[in-house]
Length: 136
Image (cartoon, rainbow, N blue to C red; front, side, top):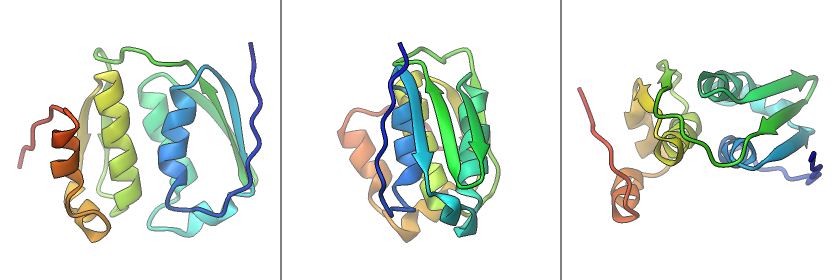
């Protein structure tokens, strides 16, 4: 069953986690009017597509839009996610959440960039029960 949701929101910082939610929701999600995501700390559309692909989530991007083919909740413990040093705190946090929820082994370079917007992020995640290891 394909579902279609259309919401118009100007929330460039929230889109990466919304993309994760779409990936973990069964059906097709379409995000339109998001061309401004290319002008953030990274090209958030392209970078989140790379992250999602690493756990087997298909997506297609066209001018100012992204379509994500969500699977629902799934086990990705046999997958690995790698995020290079993008300097984008929102990509780091969204990837962390995706990894925690799917079990994917994850390496995020320069995760410290998260401190720019959410210095207590890891502390909060630990309180919520997230299990993770920080390697230097």
